[in-house]
Image (tube, rainbow, N blue to C red; front, side, top):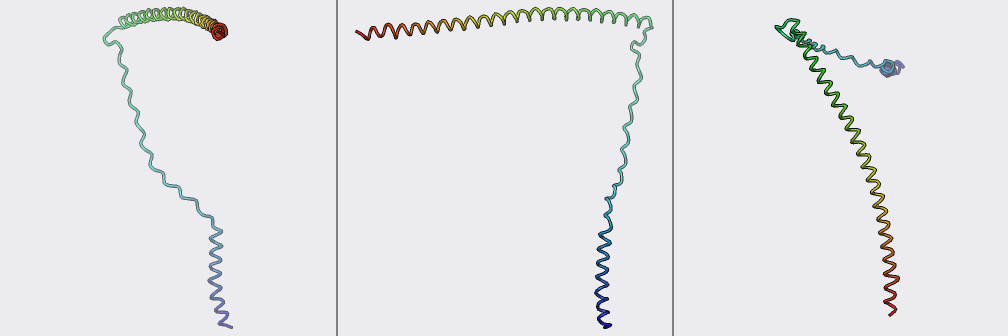
Length: 144
């Protein structure tokens, strides 16, 4: 009996340890994947130092600068007014040409109607000629 008990203990202890390990493994949740270590951030691109603003008119006094800028401003105003007058002229020409195009389109439509009417008249003449030839001349020649 001691031998049976001993054999039973030998078999039961490994079985119970297997069962308990399986239960422990089933109860333990898997760990989330580890977060990788961040890579070092790249060094920021340094901003370029702005170049110092150069004086637009070196070696000129303020009065000379003012006179020069006033002259350039007047030239730009006159060029602007010339361009505005050209734009106005082009708009007038566009209107004139659009009117001509509309007139020509209307004339084309009228001519198309005239041509269609002429085709109808020609077709009527052809029909009359056919009737005259086949109904009038040929039957009279055949009767002889």
